[in-house]
Image 1 (cartoon, rainbow, N blue to C red):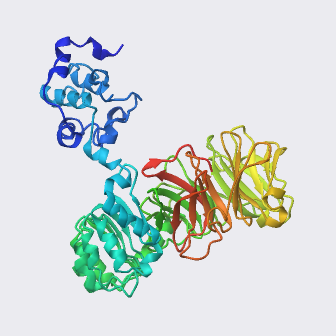
Image 2 (cartoon, rainbow, N blue to C red):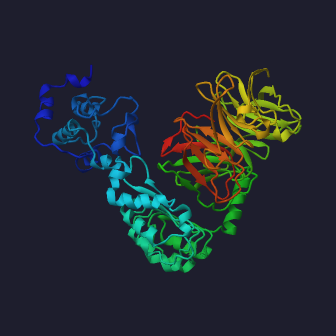
Image 3 (spheres, one colour):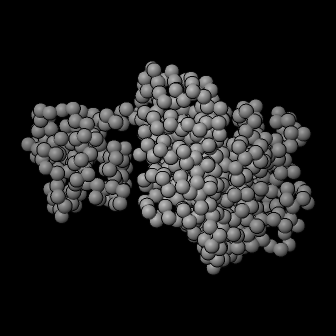
Length: 603
């Protein structure tokens, strides 16, 4: 029985007799929580794992996993119970030494719950784009979409738009601009990279007063367009990388007032950058690399036992998703980096990495240049490492296991799978049977299964083999099936992921496809270039997300303007793409999606 039911009846009666109704979260309820509750249940502290600083958080259970609010039923809402408890009670909210909401405030919250615990802004944010914009604006949206321009809500629960001009930035005309102006009041993110050099008048951007993010990288934007940018007072992120901006223009640029500004690849001098940065410490500037600063970083890295040379500023990437998906992720390959959901690099690792993952504690585990290394979170300090046995040729797989050991695979004269304990000792040594002496082509991404066995793809054998700890092969998946094109299709298995239902997802490199095999080795699902309009280019690393979507790294894609990583759903629809000129995705580890951690991890 709820403790609430033991409260005096006279405290419950006003909940049903109080006259006023129609309360709204933002206007009437949020100020109460801000005054009395957010100190202990907000961004800085979350007692009992519960937050009250946003509408979504308010309705989300804390550590108790009990719904704090039951819309329509204040007497069944634990939040009301805790607000009404005596101050001496351990569960009272706020605690005894803090100010308490008045009786009228508590009744207001109770009536708000009784009326459905509504939030006008939340209801509006969850409207589909058609209802959010209305008929006239949707005509403009459909016109833009017909020209290949992406127009979508920034997220399902946000009342704002994300617009990406994509290829049309090269030939934008007055018709496009008129349609864009129509949806300007709703547009919070605008990607106009490579806006044509023939466009010198950027005044139309002044209509986008709600913008918080603007990408004008590699565009014709220059000093003559500063006034148009300064009109965007809400900007938090501005990307002018590779534009025509000069030092004089930077001195006049006032936005973003606080946030990030990318000006690398422009004609802004290092001295001008330092001067402007000193004038506004709330704005973080990223410019062209400074030689002395680079040398200092390199020396610092060497003192931390890191043998790679840290890279200068890296141009932000570009994420495209019709439904507003945003990921943060670690990508391994020519560029080893963690990108946040804004597509900005937050950590750089050694180039030429083959495999890697971000651990639960935030440390980064990387296999590069025949050494497996673990880097302390947000640093280049090495806290653990293992080097390739000199008798072998290459070290590929690196994967931290639940028992604390690290799984690595060596290729060469003695192909083998190893478990290395935290002290660096080999505790498991499994000889592999790759069916070839070509060391480079023997194996790729091996993983340990929950049953204690190991799943190992062997490229030139056209097989994914399951090994026991003693080296016995207990199951084999053949990838040269006739239904997949036979051996002529060169379906070399690269990534093999065992799913909870027993199926196995495999990326087939030269075959340019992803196949999900049933436990008996038959094909349960296949996606190839006919399904995704040619996006597969030597798919290597990959990940199956908890929602059933599959993320694929196109390692062979060399064109800097083409997609490097993409996500497909079960219907083979591309729902997310990532572009970056320097990325060659040998492996990928998706960390978050729209702010939420990706768990469990299938990769």
